[in-house]
Each structure stands twice: as structure tokens, then as C-alpha cells.
Length: 129
Image 1 (cartoon, rainbow, N blue to C red):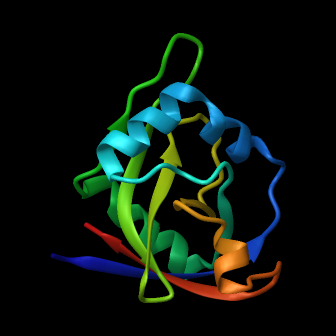
Image 2 (image 1 turned 180 degrees about the vertical axis):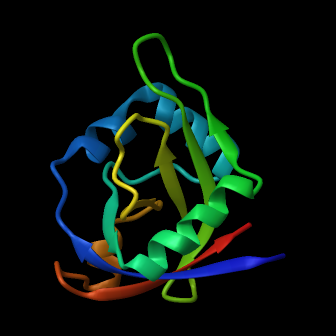
């Protein structure tokens, strides 16, 4: 399995990821396709220029599609590991003007609590291509 390693800085979002993950159809698809029930929130990671370039590799990778209900956008999920050993998934919404320097990570538990993360902490995520 090929992996891309991306580093970034944890930051607080606007809570939109949390609202999205709470939607029953999103939760169901992540459970079925990624094999875990997502914690109702995302870990937001701001990428450097190097991280943005690495994120572009995801466009060519095998992704798990999240199919929307009417009125919502589709998304892609990628199997990942945070800080080497915490299984999770990167969610990339297919939304116009979605920031290229942001990654959103979901997991079965609060990643902030599990890894004692705060805004400004640097993290490393390995994403399966």
C-alpha cells in the first residue's frame, strides 16, 4: 500500500464538519465504507505549501465516495493514520472554493481528546493512496 505523509497544524473550524458528520446518511456511509461510526466532529488541519502539494496526490488515489442526498455535496474519504497509529479517515468535501490548505479528519473518537491536541499543535497523517 502506498502512503502519502502530510504534516499540518491543528486549528478550530466553524463547526460545519461536525454538523455534516452528524447527518444520518453521512454517518451511515462512513460506517459502511470506512468500518467505524464517526465521532460527531472533525479534526481540522491547516497545511503548509508542501502539505497542499501532497494533498493534490489524493486526486489520483482510490477514494471512497460519499454519495449525498438532495441538496448536499458529495465527498471523498481516504483511509489514514494519525500520529502513526490512530486509524481515521480524511474527508474531502467536493465543494466549490473549499480551501486547498485544509484537511478534515474523522475517527471513531475525539482525536483532540485521545491525543491531547490543541490548536497550534503539529500533527502528521499518513493517507493510503
